[in-house]
Length: 460
Image 1: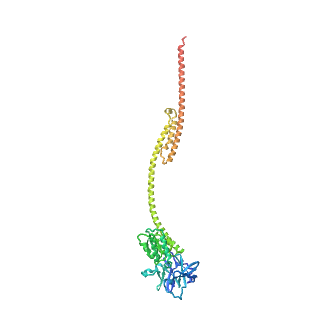
Image 2 (image 1 turned 120 degrees about the horizontal axis):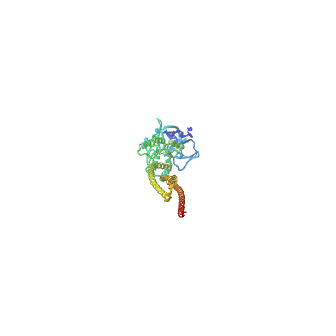
């Protein structure tokens, strides 16, 4: 099986197709399988191998692979399967999950099989409560053969219990508050599922558990109160997490946030999750990052709904307030305009009155040209006429006042000129009258003198 060295595992899985590829290998005559997406490389020779004292009994040592130090796990020893000492393991399957690399020491590599997740038999359902920790599923490539799928994540957690403790400490230090928000957790690994449920519940979330994607989808559809968030593994019997994400996005609750929480943290898996519109992809055991995303998505969802309600109420209140303000403004303008006009109208006669001619000028006005006098008197009034129409702004009113004053001044100037003309005409008329009177008197006096003279002269 040398052709498997350096293979591209990501090329074997279609996005959302609910399928998996299983690498079959043999340990002490028993057939086991592993999802090919977890497999990084298969090697026959270990570089710079050395033993590790005071480590877990199943760890035979460590070796170097492309700059990484990889622990070697004797799978037969860990599972308690007796081994023939004359037949040591020949292959090492280098895996990568939890952002860690580990080597599983196996006897041989047999084949790669293609299955649908719905073809995977849930081991918990078959065992009916029998105590078994590490077999998570069963597949049958043929009628006479079965392959056991192991819970590799749980194996690593048992070998390295510190990983579990670190997760617990992160939850204890977290300041996230669930406040009763509902989360659906779909996870086939009992160890990971229980750990998630425990830690999320401790910070205040209400957690509903599902053993696989199929059960998760059923609960998602049947729930009376929609979930605030879904956290899903990828590798699960019957329906995987990617297929579950596709189903949710096609449902009535399609906007429900989905976090893909997978032990497979490569770029290919993140790209698949993003392509299928998952809200985030987080590698398992990064519990601090998971809590932050959970808090953000549940909190943002609640805030968006509240803000949307507040926005509608605020928009309605603003509209009512604006209409009220417009009505008050119109009333205010209507009440102010007549007052301003009244003040302007009352001010005009006062100005005109101050500029009116004395009574004696009115009598002399008849001696002037009536057309000229009428035009000169009525012209300022015609110019002042626009002033009487109400302005809707104080600026317009001020401008009109200035214009009216200018017109009044102009009219006053014209009236003064008219008055001057009238006075001149009066003076001229008086002089003519005086001259005429003097002339008439002088004439009568002369005639009287002549008569007297005639009377005094004796008749010869």
